[in-house]
Amino acid sequence: MRFPAAYPRCVLSAVLGLAAAVAPIAAAARAIAANTTAPTTPPPVIEAPTSPALVKVSLALNWKPEPQFGGFYVGEFTGTYSKHHLDVRILPGGSGTPTVQMVGAGTVEFGIVSADELLIAREHGNDVVALFATFQDCPQGLMVRTSRGFTSIGDIFTHPGTVAMQKGLPYARLLKRKYGFDQVNVVPSPGGDITAFRNDPAFAQQVFLTSEPLVAQKAGIATRTFLVKEIGYNPYTTVLITRRAYLEQNPAVVRDMVAAVQEGWRAYLDDPSVTNRLIQQRNPAMDLETFAASAAAQRPLIENEETARLGLGAMTAQRWTALARQLAELRDIKSAPRAQDCYVWPSK
Amino acid sequence: MTRFRLLRIIGPPLIPLLVLTAGSELLIRGGIIPGFILPAPSAVVAAVALNTRELLAALGRTALAASLGFLLSVAVGLCAAIALSTSRLVERALYPYTVFFQTVPIIAIAPLLVIWLNYGLKVVVASSFIVSVFPVIANALAGIRSTDPALLDLFRLYGASRSSTLLKLRIPAALPSILTGLRIAGGLAVIGAIVGEFITGYGLGDVIESAKTQQRVDLVFAAVLLASLLGLALFGLINLLSYLALRRWHACEQNG
View 1 (tube, chains in turn blue, red):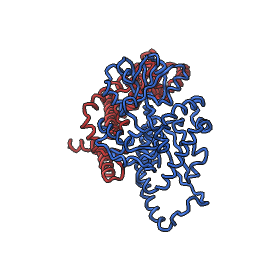
View 2: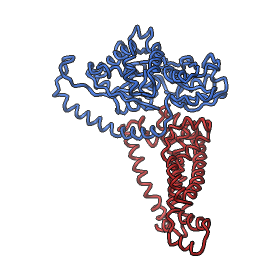
View 3: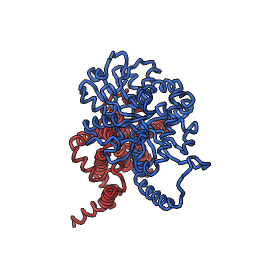
View 4: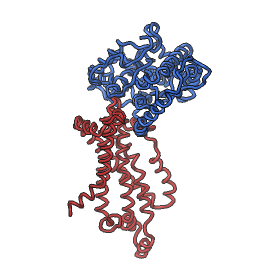
């Protein structure tokens, strides 16, 4: 899904490096400021007084403005964020935007990652926590042409062809262990671009169920997408995170953010049309029809029996524990962390 | 005496290196910069030590690709510069198009490169070439154009042909410029190669890509370190070439 963009990312890394160098100083300054002002500021007693002061926060997305972020944009367009005392600046991402590091470094308050990214980040000492899991079922999969007649994800690896995916991803290594890559030529993911897929009938590529297959369909190619969930790998995806230090210092802001996001997703699932029109202005490369199709395709992955019971974006300790075990088995992490360290969910 | 001279050569560049590595090591160990943003130099060295075989194999591939891209740039770039220098009209007609190579957003055409050339070494060499050819053309052309007019008069006076003027006067006189172009192209060839490797999954670019996906910042920097050393080696080779070619007659290799 993420583009191996070298130049932008090099630049980004450099910027991040700088940000990282500055962040601690800024944090220290903030801490000093907080210390000096804290005693004089009266505790906020009243819920929402006339005070129009909104808390400014940033939310870094890991992809372009698409329906997969629909619920996050709703708040900006309808005022849900300001109702929750927030002024949220949404930063679209792209090819491999390192949102997990940006959140960890304090460059942004909130970010979007997948659950496996979060666990690996925690392993490297980046103390980030999950707040809201948009996709209950992972929309990542491998797309092939229907004409190849494949019936399972394993078929892709037992027939000669080219498979474009990020080899470093946990599920890619899981697939390698399960099927081996002897039959296929594994190449980097072209990240959203389907040129090679159109050109080569024996090409399979890593996709989001809600993006590339719709683009391929528009191009007149009949495709089938096998979700990685098929091999039992199903991390929460498009997960809202923050860093623990921020959560501990600003519990009310985080609570507001989660509430606003939850309301936003509820509204988006009920009627995505208006929001789609507004998001589409920020991503004109994708047409409105595809926006609508994508919103419809993602719905069952976002809303299911579990969310009906626990609420949209809900997470459970069992799911986190299961994923952590899988990653430990893949040696992405040394040992599975306690599930309760990974996520915060109001209802638990 | 010789030992002192050696120190004078190696010493100055060593000081910033020591300050930088020691400084960053301290900042990271002290917890001022988190290790997931910038790995400690010791962690990078450890990553090199732990993945030596993988990294060296990748380095070899990148070195091969970058060298091929560089040589192609030199060959094509010099021929282009000579062709452009033949007449002002040709230059005016074609030179603007060579600038295309300078500005081509390689990422944008990446998917096409892969389709035209198929996944593998060719994409890497092409990317390395596209990124590094322009400085060769621009510098060589400037050098060939700026031959001393007095010497050109002299050649004309003796009735030298165009080709012998080119071979015996214009090109030798342009050597310092040409070598400057090569120095710039050397570093760019490595960058171009790694960009191509991101697209096609090859060499150090592939290692960087995988390591980044796994949030292994130490391994990313280990690969970056090797890429820099590769660039440095190419630079050193060109400097050696420059010294051998110019030491007898040109001021730039005689002073200091």
